[in-house]
Length: 268
Image (cartoon, rainbow, N blue to C red):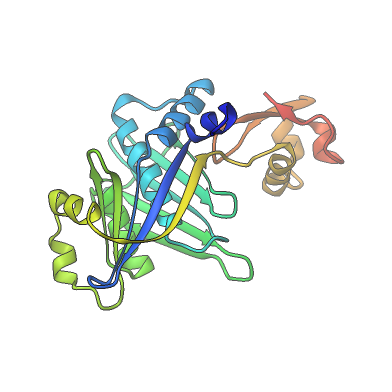
């Protein structure tokens, strides 16, 4: 029987199930991301960085697409994306770590520069491998279309992404011998029938909204950024408030911490 703590933890996670269809030569991943998105909204509201109403569906899709990517990739991979949009200029950021099944993200609305079209930036890392980076011009594409372009151009795997009512977000990814014409012709209704059909399950993962930042990590990041420019950072003060670039959580950093070993770094 599930205890109360397990039940509360499940309320903050998204279960993603991955299937294989050997006949169609596809891998299918699907999950309902309401809990993950609700956890994000609560986190952003607490930090007073909640985006405007129009941006929230985009962030919901962003978290879902990033998590589906992670679900079909190796268990030691870290990946991060930024979608830069205009009118108004905003950066949607999401990062995920398969080693801890964590996903985090935020929306930047201040001091954001944008071009004539949307751009998607990606970086992924695995131990003992060189980092992988890519930048894509995705025109005026929305989040799911932008990720389809990313899978096709950067990952070089034909893929489709859908938001299916009652089923959740669905990733249908082609294996080498997939019928590309069939894959490209799928609409939401056809994707729903297919993803809800008889497929062979191969894995289940549960992802939670969490960053993994802590005072020591934040201190390392700030030291790396400012190095010998401590006077510029502190501007005569004995402490400064800094925020995690991934999730926005705020910390107080003292000059003593910066100059020596961490001692009084704490959440703001």
